Structure formats: structure tokens, C-alpha cells
Image (cartoon, rainbow, N blue to C red; front, side, top):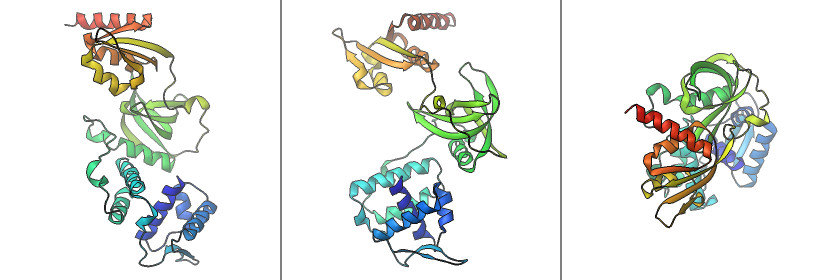
Length: 299
């Protein structure tokens, strides 16, 4: 984080005449003492940064200074630009300006051309496309949000929460937040959150309990074993590590993996249709059998 903070500080100074230490401290969520240490590090690295006191003072760069691209290797500059490109997908306010500035410095980079990061699904509606950035803004400004939420049982209700952080795990985004209705921290799947509104109510950050700090919802783990046809092999590789997949002598493939027993597991198995068979555990096999029978009754 320190190197990205230093680079963003330099980029800000390249675009502005001066910025205060307090402004930088609030921007990065660190102390002013940390900001002054950063300025010292930049000075020692040869960046001509200086401070002026007074009502119009602040931290500035010498006029006509340009960032020396020799400070970073080609690979490092590519990685830096890619990271900022990803920030742009979150609607980070200064991402485009930073990309333009650094893109002109690292002229050999192709990041502008070959990568596009989009957090929303293909079928996202207009009121959902800003969901990520809206929640992000509420987290930064410490404001309560309300939204409609569909839980694992298919029930829809309105929630008002104090948002803590966004987590990406297993191809899915989650929001960790203190739910005012339940008076406890909860984890909400972002794809089930609809109609987000930022309220005019601020909150004081609460300590997140250990059970809510994980990167995915807590659920019983199950050792899942499948026998699959080659026709769905790509689906297995899309969702699981190759070490969990094995080839059988008869040309079929086996999947052995430990996963949280959640609704998505049943949905994934059923999505494989007749090209997959649950070998274990027995209760999951029975659940799939019953659901398959219910599907058959409808056709």
C-alpha cells in the first residue's frame, strides 16, 4: 500500500499546485505523521517535493517536474497501470486522470488497450450498475445505506446497514455490514442487493467480530465427489482448481473438492444436467435426486 500511496501522492502533486498534509491524511486514512514520513521518503528518492507554511501553503512539487519512468521497470509500470485500471472499474474518482498522467509517462504500456475490468454482470440493469461505487462511497463517508435484499430462502426485504467493507471471494462480491434490523454484523452477497440508497445518517465504526471477518459466508463444509462427462469438463475448470479434477479410465472425469454446503452447490450440480452424478456425500446425492424429480414433474 505504501508504494501506491506514494505514487498517488506524486500524481496528485503533478495535477495541483499544492495539497495539505491533512487532506492527504484524510484521503488515505492515515495520520499526518505518516504523510510527513512519506514526504521525507519522496525527498530522499530524489522527488523535488517541498512544503510551504501559511494560509495558501501546503505540499508542492517544483515546477516542470516530471516523473522519471526509469524509477520503475517495464513490468512494474505495467502492473501499476493495471492496478489503477482496476480501480477505475470501482468508479474511483481520480482513476482516469491518474491513467492519463501515468499513461503518458509509460508510453510503451498497452494496458489502455488490452484490459477492461467490469464488476457487473451482463444483465445488470441501469440502477444496479453503480451499486459497487455507491456502497464504496458510503463506506468511505461512514454513512448508512438501505437496500432491498433477497436472502438464501428467496425472501425479499429492506435492510438498513452500516457498511464496513467489500470482499471478493470465489468469483463473488460480498458486503460486510452491521445490520440495524438484526443488531449484528452480516455478510450480504452483492448480486442480491438491489436499489441501494445512501441515507443522511452517519455512523461510528464498530469492531467487526471474528466470525464476520472471513472472506466468505460461514457454512458447513462438505466433501463433494462427482463423476462427470467430458462435455462439462470446461465447467469444472471454470469453478475449481485443476488438482481437484482427475480423469478415469472410462474417459469420464472425477471432481473431489471440499466446499461450503450452500445453495450455489446444488445449483451448480443441477446446471450440469445429465452429464454429472453425485457420488458423495449421500445426503447431497439425495437432495439432487429430489430436486431433479421436481424439475421433471414440470415438463
